[in-house]
Image 1 (cartoon, rainbow, N blue to C red):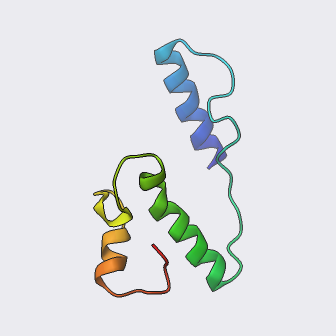
Image 2 (cartoon, one colour):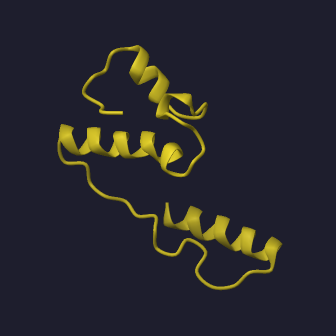
Length: 79
């Protein structure tokens, strides 16, 4: 993943004429050791479009699986 990030970052920086750290250390991997950690990570991802003002509700964002979770009654993922 790191190599992919570096390659993408370099390409974007080259096209935009930017320098410095492209990803700013925000993106990292973490181990999801149990079911609750997985549910928490999914809920975080589902809420991101709402936090960023891209959709009023998680299930309204077209590129998210939140609508599927909401429709299928997967109550374990708190949207």
